Image (cartoon, rainbow, N blue to C red; front, side, top):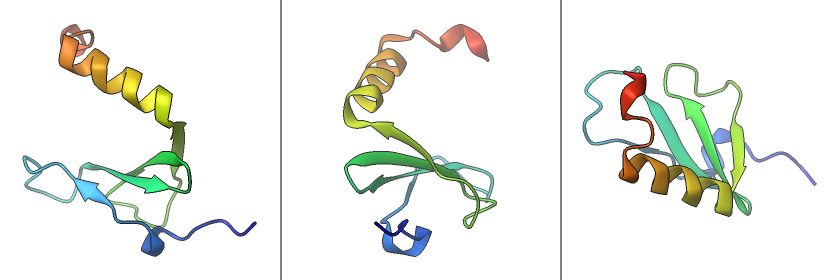
Length: 68
């Protein structure tokens, strides 16, 4: 199976991102992909849908608020 290109993915950037230094998220095959907006041709990190849902739930729950 051929690796999808970043151009075949509908990448989303947070509305609060005002510069080109943000994380972008998109559906890559049956997973969630994450990439750096400064390097759109660079690496894509992939997470299963369950991993992504767990991460988002943790963010909403405040599990990472003490990191910044």
